[in-house]
Length: 286
Image (cartoon, rainbow, N blue to C red; front, side, top):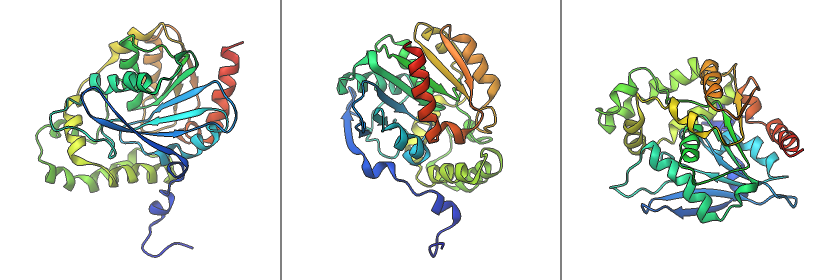
C-alpha cells in the first residue's frame, strides 16, 4: 500500500545502507571535511573497497551492491565535495585536481593497505580516480572504472549558464532537470527515482561552486597517465547516462585496461556486481 503523500518515485527512493554504516568525517589538508561510510566485512577478508560514486550520487543508488559486497569486502564509501554531506570552508578550492587529492588523502588518513585496495568508481568518480592515480601517490591492487567519463554531462544550456546564473535561478531549473532525467537519462523507474532524489537533495551552492570549475572541460589525457595500474573498465552500453564510444576510447588510452560490457546500470549497481568483482579478483590473482 502506498503511503499517503508519497509518489512511486519517493517510495523507490528509500535507502538502507547508511543505517548499518559507521559515519566518519575526515578533515582534508585544506580543512574541508568529507563524510565516509564504513562497513566491516561479514567474513575475514584481505580486500578493501574504496567506493567513489558519481556526481552527487547517494548510497541508495549502490544499496544492493554494497549490501552484498560487505559479505566479503571491507567498504569505505567516500562522499566527494559536491555531496550534501561535505563541509567546505568558504575559501576552499573545489576543482577536479583538489577532489582527486581528497582520494589520496583518504587512503593515507585511513591507513589503507594499498596492495589489497580496490578503487571502485563510477561516472564522475572515475574522473576523480583517474586524476588521483596520475599523481602517483597511491598504488591500488585494482582500479574499477564503471561508465568512465572525460567530461561532465549536464542538461542542455546549464553547462554554459552555471557560471553566470545566481542560485535562485538555478533552483528554478530543477523541474527541467527532473524532466530531462525521466525522459532521456534513465533506463528504468528505479534508476529515475535515484537520480530524482539526487536532484531533490542537491546543494545548489556546492553544485554551482564545483560545477563552474569543471563545466565544458574535457580530460581525455589523464587516462593516458594511469597505464601502469591494473584497471577494469566496465561499459554500460544500454545506459542512457553514459556514452559507450567514450568508454571504449578511454579503455584504449589505458595500456593495462581490460574492457567488459555489463550492459546496464541496473547490473553494475546490483548484488550480481559484487559476485562479478569477486570472480574477477580470483582470476587476477591466479
